[in-house]
Length: 142
Image 1: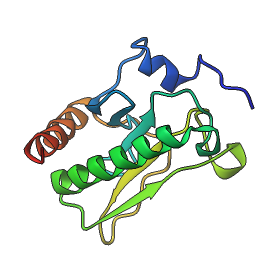
Image 2 (image 1 turned 30 degrees about the vertical axis):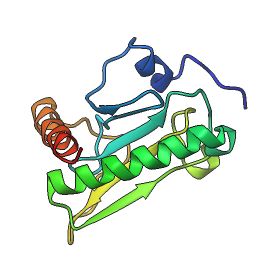
Image 3 (image 1 turned 60 degrees about the vertical axis):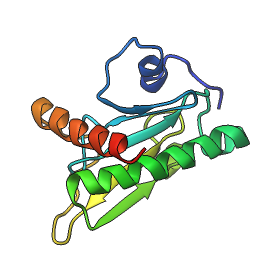
Image 4 (image 1 turned 90 degrees about the vertical axis):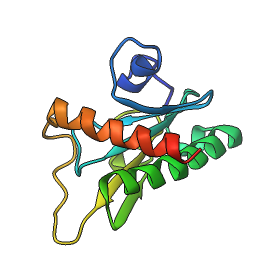
């Protein structure tokens, strides 16, 4: 499948659509999912155009994993989650809904079920509060 540069993540990367950014470097961007499955649900994506992990360059994959690791630690501290689900889907048959490779960081709490994926928008004020806590954790970990 060819990369479609009109997908929502490509548009976010170009600044055409807003996001609640928690981290950015030369190779990656991390922001809160606006339809979170759990408080702190964060997405990490490469700036390199690639549909799946298999389309991503080795350098892009390395950058994504390093950013995912760094941001996941901050998310976990920010929301006090005892566990994290980190997932990455490749292709529609695997559940990928946006054709730009990305990683989900989803905090997990005992006894709390995840919300359905992509079904319910999060409260904007709550998302902003969580983002501030995550960016604070990232800043203090430098």
